Length: 171
Image (cartoon, rainbow, N blue to C red; front, side):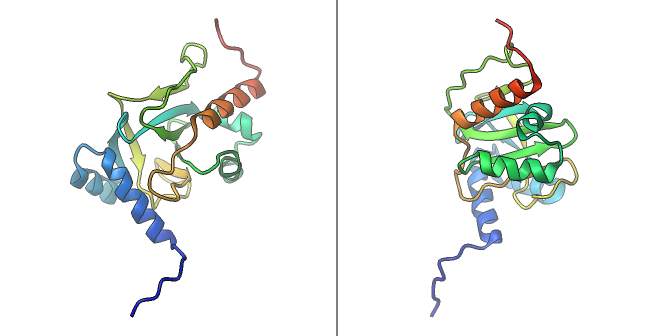
């Protein structure tokens, strides 16, 4: 007889998050293979998830640090749950948000900040990659299926970072 312990292990959380993320794949088997072989899979935005792309300099300004460990800890405190990853090569963060989110900030007012919704594809790291190595990693790993960032928290992060940089929006 099995007895439930009430504790979910890291591998169990990663498996559940991966299974949920596969719902955004054009082909689940292909995405699974991409994660296994390359550590990154191409997912579709605008269905179960969308993303906000934020230049690292804005996130680092909000965090008052560019040390990745400190920034990761800052993001864990900033967001009430949610999931985000960093593309180390492009120096960009991606906050995952609901697929039908109503993003209010305009790209022309916030250069480099983009909402990736319907008709966009996103290279997403495997859920097991939680250390800053290789191409990208989960700086704020998904803790449970569908655990996405609140849009107002993402907007606030962008505004805080931009203010810390002393940038102004063009209007």
